[in-house]
Each structure stands twice: as structure tokens, then as C-alpha cells.
Image 1 (cartoon, rainbow, N blue to C red):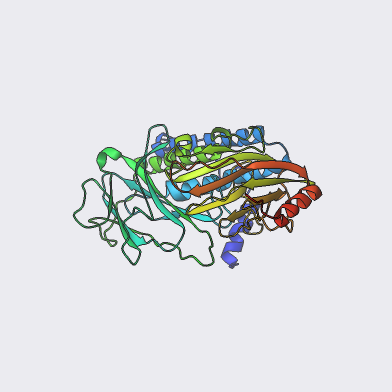
Image 2: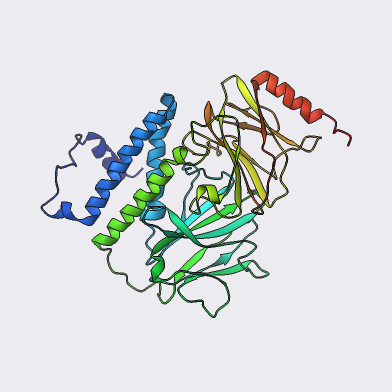
Amino acid sequence: MSPFLFACILFAWLLPTGALASEEGPEGFDKLASVAAFDELMQTVNQLRNAILEDAANEREASEGMRFILRTLAMSQDVTGDGYPAAPHFARMDTARRKAGGDNPDGEYYTLAWEGTRDYKITGNIGSADHFSFSVLSMQPTGRSKSLGYANERTLGADENGDYTLWLTAKKPEAPGYWIKTGPSAGFGSVLVREYFGDRETERPATLEVEVIGRKPSDPLSPSSDQEIARSIQMTRFAFQGIGLLHRYVSPSLDATPNQFKRRNSDDFGADISSPDNLYLIGTYAVGPDEALIVEVDPLDVRFWNFAIENPWHESVDYAQRTTSLTHDAVSLDPDGKVRFLVAQGPTDYPNALETAGHSRGFMTFRWVGERDTVTPLPEVTRLPLAEALKQARAQSKAQPSAE
């Protein structure tokens, strides 16, 4: 740590509480649109704080909820507030520690901000991941977004080398590539990129580049105006509020009957949460410290699927340190052709074991990429004492397939 950085940290610790705060700014500053937007954001932060404390069932959930609020705010500012459509970049939503919004532990998410008065060209290589897609979204007055277009690794039109071009323009370009119409009437919006890996160690990630058509990187940009900054703060607030309350309004909610699954797709969630070919079996779980869930499912014949555990705030449980998700490439099939997962609060030596990291409740999600009309049997969930669950699951893994 540099001496200067250490001095700054020490100064922050020694500074009296409230020393940087004042009742009002200099005359006129508190009338700025950006200041008003900031005040609204702070009110929303406090509202989410109260909602988390109301919904928390114990001290751990409350504490993690406070951290969740900060992570969600940081992500919302990073990917939305700092989107800067005049010179946009692809911002990564999740990190090794920051996970929110019901994220896929076996995937990556990136966003890009655009505005309809500019045209954009996105290029790169699709890589070798099982799934790679673009959802082009337009912000609505409600704070939610609607879809303007969607393309994935099959429809993007990549060449034999995997190189692709995606145009976001008011008029269809003559040059080759996949086109999604934007234009001034589309207002402001975002591009959400999803990339899912069956096996991260062997698959090659996609690449992403963006340019504003007609603008050189060296061209100077005007300083941000008060209205532009106010809008970026408002966008941050919309994203923050939406992700922060997912546990309440995305079905099933946190208070739903546990250890059951429901089928869900983008018609249920909305285009700003799910894409057309992302399908789900989602439910809440309840499991005690000396218990386990046996989750039995028929494997899906699709491009990608996985099963993941989340905490009560729709954060995927710390997959960097624990086994909290498994993909189609990682699971072991039983002799009868089924996949049986054993979900417990801690680690076990069962082949398809997942852990909740000590959480007694939260969300569990099967997600897959396939045809829209794919219908799969709902998983069967059995709640048992841990020792009995291990015994039963191991017996099934050694059973002979039935003769049919």
C-alpha cells in the first residue's frame, strides 16, 4: 500500500461523522437535476434497506442483505450509470464476488448503453461457448425495458471463423451483418450479452468490440451536462431498484411454498430479465443443517443446461469457493438415465452435490437454452435427514437400469 493511500484511509477513519455532510449545498446547487436524481437514488437505497430487513429471517440474511445492497448499487452504477452512449463500452455485470439478479454461475453477462440518435457497430468472434447472445432493449417510462431484437450464436450470422457483425442503426446498412433497428424514436437502451459455458476450462470466450459509426476514438466529446448526469443517475436507480427487489416480484417469490419448481420463461419474467430461448425451472428451497434435498430430474437434450443454488436475495452462492452449480458437462447420470442432485447446507462427497453455504432457504434454478416449446417434467424433490439422503442417493447411483 502506498503512503498516500494509507494516509487517505487513515484520514477517512479519523474524520468525525458528518464532517463531509451539510444541510444544503451552495445556493442553487440543490436545484440541479442531478442533485434531485441523487436524492431520489438515496431514498431508493433506504427503501431497499427497509425491505431487506423486513424480509430477512435471521441475522445472517440481514447482514448479507446490507452487502447485497452495496453490490447491487455498485453494479447498477458500473453497467448503467457509467454506460455513456456517446462512447460506450461493454461492462461486465458480475465479478468473482459480485453476483446479483439471479445470475448464472456458469455464465458471463455484459451490458452496453446506447441512444437512438447514434448508430453503432458491434463486432467480434463468437468463441466456443455453448451459448452466446445479444438482447437489445429499449428503456420504457416504467423503468422496465422492452425488446427491440435478439440474436444468438445460431442466428447472428457469424462466418466460418466465428466472426460476426451486429448493427444497431436507424436504417439497415448495406454492409453484411445482423441488423436490429434502433433510431431516435427508440430513445435510450442497453444491450445485454449472455455467454454460458458447459466447461469453462475448455471453452473459448467470445470477444466484443463496439464503435459509434462516424466517430473516431480521438474525436473530443463535450463534457457531460447536468441533464445527462441526472439521466445516468436515474438509470442507475431503475436498475438498482429492479434487481434489489427480484426476490419479491419474480415468481416464485421468497415466500413461496419451498422445494417445488415452476416452469418459467421470458413471458413470465420480461425481456429485460430473460431472453426468448432461456428457459427455467425455478423454486425456493428449505433445508435444515442436518438435512438434504434429493433433486431428481431427467437430463435435457439441449445446447446448455445447469442447476444452481442462490441465497434469499437472488445472489448465486459463492461459487468461487464452493460447488453451488453444475452444468450438463459436469453431472453424473445414474443407471436409470436420471440425474440426482444432493443439496445440503455444507459439502458432501456425493458426485452431484451442491451446497447452500449454510443457508436454510433461498432459490434453486434449472436453466437451459433450447426451443421455446420445450417442456420437461418437473423435478422431484425429497427432503430427508442428511445421512438418509446420502444413503438413498448412493443406492440409486448403483441401481441397475430397469428393463423395458
